[in-house]
Image (cartoon, rainbow, N blue to C red; front, side, top):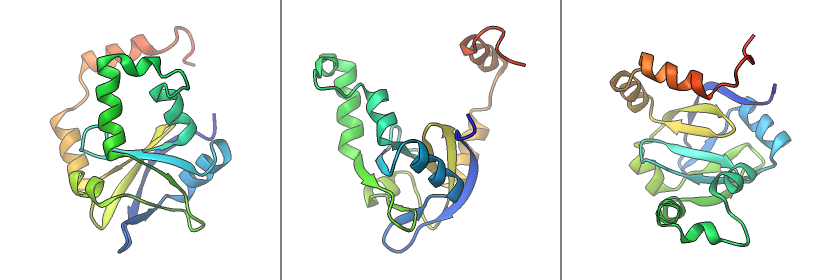
Length: 155
């Protein structure tokens, strides 16, 4: 459990649109999943970086492909694959985030890279602050989260 992707770090884009993955995240990703990634945006607010094995499991990618016949799954796959690219962490720990994704999420020079257990999100800091202020956690949110936790597992 010590290798979960947790926390938030600042990072900067270079002139080519590459961003260096913070060392703590890069080490965990490479040790657990390897260097292959899938980079996409689910909502245009931010960019998601999934280790490829996590993305394959989450998206239900399989040789059968029967899930892709469901309209909601097909719509989801069209959206994320239209914007997404398979990539690899380079020898300097950087990844290329395409111009279209950077523009949609308003990612410029300095960004926040946030660990969400098994993947990363890259945010424009001002946009992230605004989003968190506009949509604060409510008591109902905490109740919903508590329902997802295994009973008796919190110490």
